[in-house]
Image (cartoon, rainbow, N blue to C red):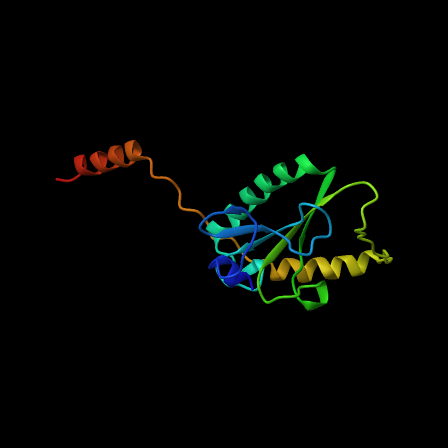
Length: 157
């Protein structure tokens, strides 16, 4: 349905749109103003976003959050990755849910005790699987480059 919404084949109440993302009011909201933000490109997970989309996503969430805070006391920003986490569709979607005192939404969990050695094992697995960032190209100092070039030319016979 999200691809169809992006193509204007399903009627929506648009809140925001750019070349990468579309935000619409949820048709079955938890609370008034419940917004779904999703990629126009068909991807299943946040990890499939490219670098530009990832940077843009943060800006869009910030804009929408500011607007949604005008109608609420707080906001939950939820990304459910995988069926076990509650992902209902094979499309990357963020739910932005305005909150107010005594609303019907509840987010709870039962904490579990974890031993320090178990924490260290989990930490190592996470760190081993963390994608490595590519080094960014260093800006060229043109003045320094010219000086080195002319210096090397003077040394030639």
